[in-house]
Every structure is written in structure tokens, then in C-alpha cells.
Image 1 (cartoon, helix red, strand yellow):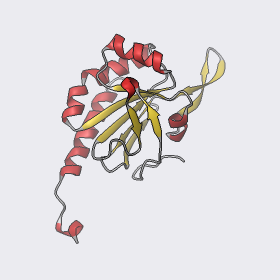
Image 2 (tube, rainbow, N blue to C red):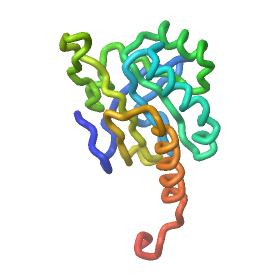
Image 3 (cartoon, one colour):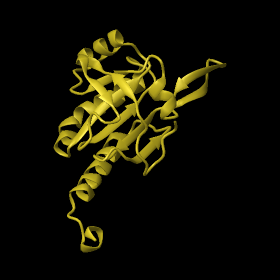
Length: 168
């Protein structure tokens, strides 16, 4: 089942580093940022992971859980996480279930050959489990700051008291 902005995230279960289980209901009540990246220990992915690391306390302060997702296995993720001292968990989507559900598997041309790869993408899920925003085919520069701004805006709207109209 594909994901759609302003709709509930479909059911999924995934394993992350440190034995953390992540599902469509595991973080209800909390804003969730899922960033999909092509591969551990590659230049762009390392830069992106470090930018999320460097802003992690700000994401935490805004009430958001951050998870990186790639097709790498847990051993690769454990090494990548330790090497970069990442404070958030990495999801090992080795069977590409989440990648397909979020529609980030794309055909790419690498060294003149067509290969299946992950399109760098980020998804913002509200505390109610509804997909609030998505960024696809992103460039790393400035992206994390943009996501943090969206998290802060979502936190404000999620924390806003219900108006009289909404209460009726």
C-alpha cells in the first residue's frame, strides 16, 4: 500500500539498531522523521546522517523521533552508527518493504548501467500517525534545517488548543 500525504501511514514493522522495533503505531503521540538514504558509508549519506546528528537535540526538543532507513543490514548500520556517533537509530530494510511502501526505490543510471537504488527522501509523520509532509529526491545541503523547521511548525499546530468550531 502506498503512502499519501494527510492519510494514515499503512501498517509496517521494522527492526532498528539497538534492538528497537519500529512500526506504524510504535511512536504514536510523537512526531516521527524517517529519512531514507541510499547506502551507509557513502559521501552524501554520511553528510546527511551527520547533519541529522548535529541537529538531533533540536529534533528531540521539538518532540520528534528520527530514524534513518536504508537497505543495509544491521551489521553495516551498527558500524555506521558507531563510526559517526549517531544518537538516533537506523532501520535495516533489507527486504525493501518500507522502501517500496514509501515509494523510494527508483531506477538509476550508475556508470552507464541501469540499477535499482534508493531515492534520498524524508517523511514527516504527525503524532496521530498521519503523513504530514514528504521531501523526495532531495539534495543534502540545507535539507535537515528545512525538516527541523517543518517539525517545529507541526509541533505548534499539534499543541494548539482546539477552537470552538473543532470542539463541536
